[in-house]
Every structure is written in structure tokens, then in C-alpha cells.
Image: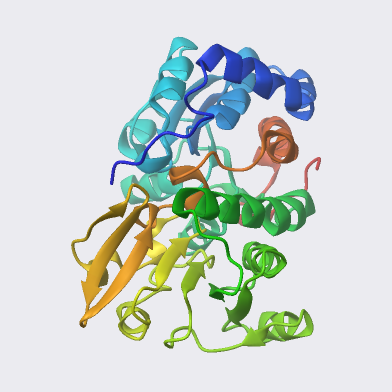
Length: 353
């Protein structure tokens, strides 16, 4: 679906860039700590918005050759793409990224790692993955090199995931729908740190919140946090939001049980968390929402099922994402210096955080 631009995206690019630099000083400091990366060929999967451009520029200024695969066409800002291309960064698909013969990868979603494995490419020395979706995909591969889990780092998991994603997701939904959450029944699928942040923020905004979580330990934490833990589905929820990082969480069976007028929102990395095929073709209700007929009921879909805060909004705030972006920059420097010291496979990230 074609999504309208936000007021922020309508501001002249150079103004936005200067404002972003003003509030992302940690990222600038991390860029100054990068080692010489002149021998590095770095393939990156990222959502191409202005905040990501700043860590891409840091890699280039450290001497790395950089190629980028946009994590999702719905979150790619055309003016940002043109900007990074002026820095000598090619923007392309995962296959071309592998054919480019990278030595290192930094990813949101694991598309390049998966493509490299499918092609039998063994030229990658080490990689970083920073999303739960990507980690689930990487864990299923027979890796020929080490990949490090950046999502598990407390700065990423317990700050970015827990606080900033929930806030920016609900801000985007409210801004785009002109609906408050007051008195609405919200069902959160998944009680990892993103799901926990969504649930707590929704409750703070006046919603009546339930949580669906299959992991017993996380379900217990959700109950201790004061949320009713239920099965995913049922006809109570006004809004279902998914944040599991797993394909098909909002399945056809779940969709068939939702009440008339339920709005489905995806706060995870990939639209695959929702069975979009089960919804069928839809029509626009408002610019960020489509309506779908399922079993005689109207089911609403936000932002085409793409990650809500970036596809329909501006993502996380500059000052909050500054912490995450600084970690992304620092992790690439550590990867180049020490990634080759580890065996093949998926590892916790042990570098600076």
C-alpha cells in the first residue's frame, strides 16, 4: 500500500539531517572509535530511514566499502536512499549483496546471511544480527562463520526493545488513525521485551490489555506485571498487535476468530508475522488502514502489515535511537577487530556495549 509521508518526512532533508546529528551525539562518538576499515567489505540490511543513514555514513568514513539491502520497501525513504548513494553506498537486493562478495555483515532480519547460505558463499568472516526475526532465521542455518546476537545486549533488548518500540508504535497508530487507546481492548502477541513495552505503554495510554504468550516463563512475568494471559485470538480485542519475530503468529485461525472491526498491527520486523493471504485483498479505509472481509466480518490492517512505527511513521525518536545506533556502530568495529576469533555459529555479542 502507498503510505502518506509524515510531517517530519516533509521537512527538507538537510534540515532533518542537521537536527538528527544534533540529537545523536552518542552515534557520532562511536563513529570516532571505529578502527580503520579500509579492507572491509560490509553488507548491511537495514530500514533505510534517516537514523540508519548516520551509522552507514560512519562505516564509510572509517574506510569500509558498504552495500545495503533495504529491510523493507515500505520503510525505505527515497530521499535517504539517494543520500546514501551519494556517499558511494550501493542499495540493492540480497543476491547482489552476496555477489558483491562481502567480508562482514550487519543486519536487521538476516536476509543476506540467508542468501549467502543458500548460495554456499563462504567469504564472510563474521556478522551481526540485531532483530529477533533475523536471529530465528540464522539459528536454522548451518553457518560457516560466526554471527553475533546484538538483540540480546541489554542496551538493545532492555532499553530499545522495552521502551522505545512500544512508545513509537502506539504514537504512530494514534497519529494515523485519530483513535486514542482509552477503553479499547488490546491483545499483545508475545511478551518479550518488545511485547512487554507495547503492553505497558498501551496500559499507560488507557487500554485494557491482555497478553498472549506461549513461553511459560514469559507468560508468568506478564501475569506478575498485572496482565491477563490468554490464548491468541478470540473476539474481544479491538486491536491485536504482534511482536514475536516469528512467521505466521497471527494465523488464518487467529484471524477467523477476531471480532468485526478488529485492527491488526505489526510491531515486529517482518510482515510475515501476519498471514496476509488469509486476509485477502483489501481496500483503503484511511491512508494507513485497509479493510478486509473475512467470514462476513470486517478486519482492519494497519500499514499493510509492515512494521508499524517505521512504515506508517518515523520510527523511534532520535535521542532514544541514538543509544541503539551507537551500539550498532561500536559492534561493527568490534566485529572487524575480533569477529574472526570465534568459531562458526550463533554467539552472544561480547563486545563493547
